[in-house]
Length: 217
Image 1 (cartoon, rainbow, N blue to C red):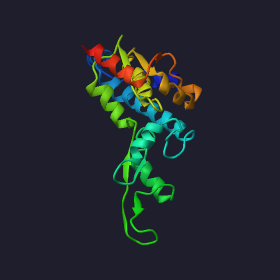
Image 2 (cartoon, rainbow, N blue to C red):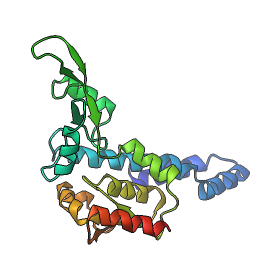
Image 3 (cartoon, helix red, strand yellow):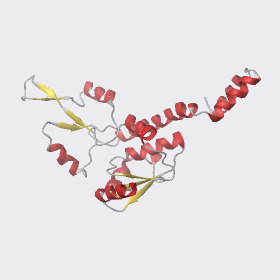
Image 4 (tube, rainbow, N blue to C red):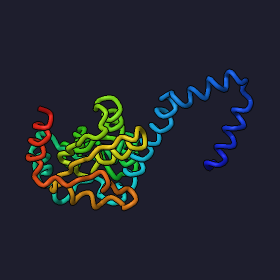
């Protein structure tokens, strides 16, 4: 259904109401947040899921980039075998699907060649779509006119979260991304460009953390 058809259908539906109820319904449509929360909120989730789908086609299954040497080093120092599964790109159902297709495993062999296995530890360096929705809708304050510092942006999940929030509440804020993370954003197809929101932070991630802490004081 396109916009013209939707308008026609809406007028047809409204014409069936009694005048008093029509006035009440129009007032609810004008002033209530329910429509925006239910309809535009879902649009924001669909937007994030669409971005994640496009990104999955541009990165390896573990979504680790060659430049992320520090993250690789931390994983190698863990006491148990650990694989990286990006939480923004893959939810639990998608991980299960990859395992069923033999593209990923949740277990590792305790003794090579035997049937003795143990669960792998999974780690993510990105927020999931659900976590982003919760942060922007229930944790963070109104970001209108504010500056958000994204430290360790990686694939840009927080940027996309802000973009998804724009469709939901029309929030307007700037997002600082460190120079160390800018190189990962080139993986994003042009149709999801966030250059109107993104500003380069001229420093390291440590500098950005200090900047963010000072901004809270």
